[in-house]
Amino acid sequence: AMGLMGAMRLLMARHLALRALLDDDGAIPGVFKPDAKDPAQAGAQSTMLWEACLLPFHWHPTAAKYASHLASMPLEGPAPSVGLTHPDELMAASDVTKGGFRPPVQPPAKRRHISYGPAWKKERLQRPMTDPFRE
Image 1 (tube, helix red, strand yellow):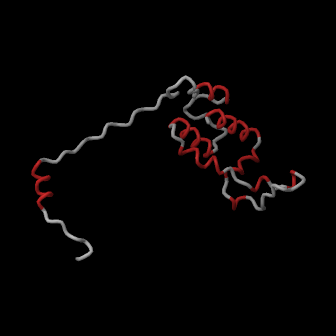
Image 2 (spheres, one colour):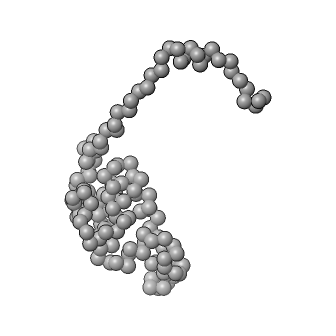
Image 3 (spheres, one colour):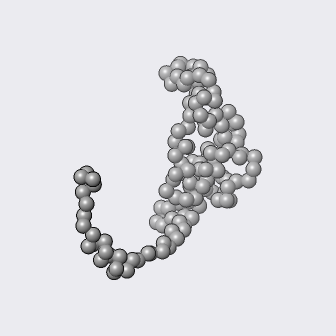
């Protein structure tokens, strides 16, 4: 996914008309006609790249961060904190063929466990159960 997002960023930087793929349907008038004989008449600029909208929810945090950066479209500014911009570098940096996660996923923060004493448990168990439908 990282290599493809890098390629998508390069393509959108070179061909500014591709930015319309990330806009909503109301931005460009027309209808996409995939069965048109002439590609110039197909209206490809009227479609949307829906798959890119799901990438910020990627399971890997680095891919999700890069996808969010790509969706915001700051093509003139610096690359995201991944630090790599060429698709080959992005693919090599996130290669998982040998197992593990690259870059490594940070473990979740430890959650505090709240324990209640035996008095709370005993009180809750001794209360009579009520039927919510009879009240």
